[in-house]
Image (tube, rainbow, N blue to C red; front, side, top):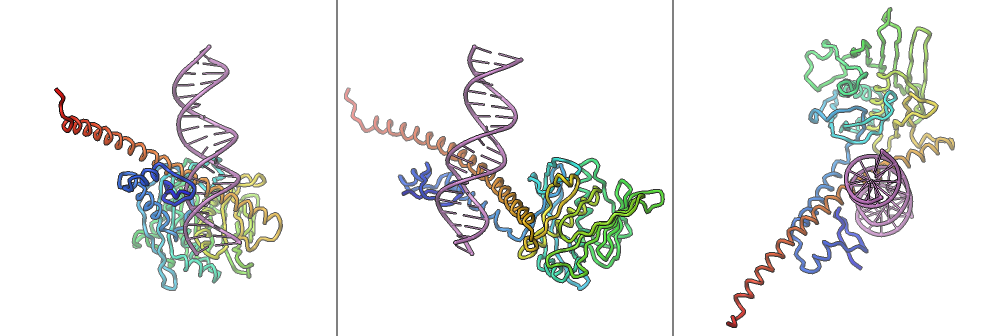
Length: 366
DNA sequence: GAAACTATGCGTCAAGTACT
DNA sequence: AGTACTTGACGCATAGTTTC
């Protein structure tokens, strides 16, 4: 039985690669292939060296911009939370926009934060931090979207809110933050955790929409109530969603929901319940669906949904793994080809040298 | 131009391996 | 034992090339 190194650096049984065969013959594998394989292994190690990062994909387009920025969130208790945003280049999406059927996501926004604080906020039924993170991220992400996707409004924060505050620093001292979109919508994020969106109407109140997350009223363990209220000219709509499903139509609210879901995902590392944004179902063609945690699943339908979710996650991971595997394989083959070229040149030189030595050593018979 | 062929890439499954 | 990762194999889709 042979032990061979695969091109990803792992030892596998039952395989014999070209590389191994040659190294068995001369024992000296110090050429470019060996060095490159070492680089592969280092690269892989490096890829796996940031286990605390939680990532979420946000729909958008265009090339990645900006550098990783650490944002500080100061809590009322004096604690400071570090939130790091990293914008990356093309990656597949896990969020589908209800406005755009197929979203080409070209960057991932990852936030590294002190998850223990977020977890403690969840456990203490506090949504202040979550809202503050939403507040921090909302303008950044929506502006990213607005610059690339037509129809996504651009957010301009009112100067009175940020004047005198250092960049990238947000505090919880201001009770309400008001933003205005380029389409005229006003977005207010109140201290109580309510996000209000008002459309420009004749009386200034029409189209008022409120997004509230609350854990008051003794919610079930692991379930955060998401409340969405929309007030329009023809009446008021209200949805009280105990962590199961919610349907929203408004584009801005959808964006907010993505951010809220991001916060859930960020806080879901470890033992916390997992919330996931999924593609809209056929019954909810324009909605964003939030799935509750496995711990709160009871009905067969929910169990089936969870199984489907797990399968989709596994397929997605394997999809990415296959891509990466093929990339490594191509790189490995390139290395082998270049090695072949080098060895052919060496062989040619050695043959020529041998011929020369033969000529020198062999007595001339003339 | 249409059909046949080839190359390439992707998604999925399954088996093997490493790790806890 | 269970889980995650890696990779060969298979089928499919698409683009490019060749043949008629």
